[in-house]
Amino acid sequence: MFDPVVYETLMLALEDGAVTLPENGPVLFLRAEVTPYLSQLPKDRLVCQNSFKPDHDALKAAGFEVLPPEAEHFPAAPLTLILPPRQKDETRALLARALRDAPEGGTLLACLPNTLGSKTIEKLLREIAGETEALSKNKCRAFWAVKDSSRINTVLMDEWIALDAPQPMEGGISSRPGLFSWNRIDAGSELLADSIPEYIKGRGADFGAGQGFLTREVLENCPHVEHMTLLEAEHRALPCIAGTLSGFDNWDAQWADATKDAGTALYDFVVMNPPFHVGRADAASLGQDFIRAAAKALKTGGQLWLVANRHLPYEQVLGECFKAHEMLEDAGGYKIIRAEKPKRKR
Image (cartoon, rainbow, N blue to C red):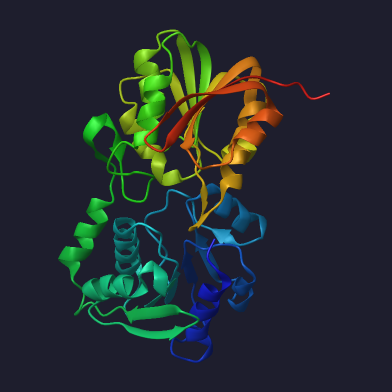
């Protein structure tokens, strides 16, 4: 979730007339989030996009029109608003797709805090659009470009879009920009994979599965595992999971918020490297919610196998949700924890 001042600065570009809010046609909002500032836009013409399930679902619940999560082609909107994502290569592709699909004369308007490299991202837009303008306030920068096909660097635009496709990486994973540890196997996940014993069995789940690395390691090395279910909230990861698990047939992947959609008493074991960011901010509570969801989703006697950064405060919630837990390893800034037998609620 962005700080409200980002939205305030974004809307300022419209309020002071630097960018014109069109009277007709759709207003497209890429990576939109539910915020009171959306009320300043024409709801009947607003089309939102977000491939992260909690944000996607929140937008739909608030009554906004939301594009399908897999959408990578956008409506031809005279105005496109953009909240650039964290990862630069993902941002390049998003800007390139937005420019590609905008009509001639359409405006792309984006905003970021200065601390997140707003000038750098504006430069990226200028590289493909040919010219940008900007305003600064609240330690944020709003910047925009008008589509003029005579100035567009189409070669670079197409290159950025192509680089965003799922692609093979070292270690046998398929990945793409923007996913967690997208171009390498995360050291914590690798440590957890090495710690999971071959004897685990039954039906398992991978919460916050990312590219599917942990599930692949389980299926390759644990012959008594019958099936793995992967829960991943970022829809962009699902094609990568399919690539990573090519050759295996005893798995399914769900576009799901593990903290809400994991179900009850379904699994013999759960593996996870839970996220601890909400948007751009650290939030240990998110990992704690993953642990609670795992306890609920495990059958009586099931086990949770967890890797986390050493400093994250998970022990209290583990004690509340499980009969027993132990730290199996403490290395490289990570801790490996096994928790057993979730308590039955009275």
